[in-house]
Length: 325
Image 1 (cartoon, rainbow, N blue to C red):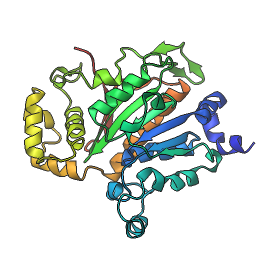
Image 2 (cartoon, rainbow, N blue to C red; image 1 turned 90 degrees about the horizontal axis):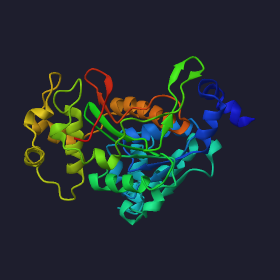
Image 3 (cartoon, rainbow, N blue to C red; image 1 turned 120 degrees about the vertical axis):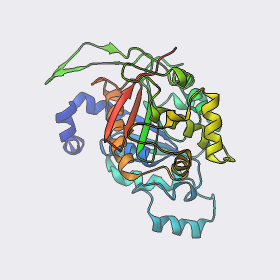
């Protein structure tokens, strides 16, 4: 049928059963950014339905977003015709998402209410959630909601900033997967171990977040967390003073934001905080995270547990394991 013709290459790659699971799934996208738009584009083209939850005003919230969904000419027209705050980002992107894959007609949708107005049960109806620009408290709340259901549901919190990007991934306590052992060979079902929920990840003191190959907390992880807290403020203070206070509260030195490859001043990081997204970084990290969503939906392939960090300086993307102290 038409479905099999369109997804023929994917069926050959993942198998008919995996494609069926993807075609039956729905992913919730909270607060669109360049990286989450890349994930959404890739998955919608692959047959995974999208629900966009973004109550922010259009075009103000997306003027600098590196995404083909939002054209400068369209934004200027919307600004002149609608005035301010009369259209949400979710509403504006809806027709663009529908155009991507006609086979998903009627399955994609939007949610224009703010996160605070949504019940905990709202989040549990989706097979995966991909979010950007969340506060730590919002991430913890959604995580706690997902822990109440039996089936494992993937929850990703990701952002990019300058040449770097970071993602926290929670596959759910009950998620099981089969590791690929070779051509057409899969392992028995395996749990994600050690497992840490998103709420627990956000509560781990960063001063002790080290690993086998990381004798100190990774710079990209620190930068993501300081920016999450900074972006969550309505009245944003001067970044340098905010970052200095944040580092002191979290018992970290200023060297936690530097590396052998990149030694940025707080003033430079302040500029990145104001204009964070770079198109190639969003595209690369979005492609990698889209693959993690497919792993979660199909149960095939070892998942990235539980932080992924991308550096545009060397083009590398690696995982890091946050653990309870």
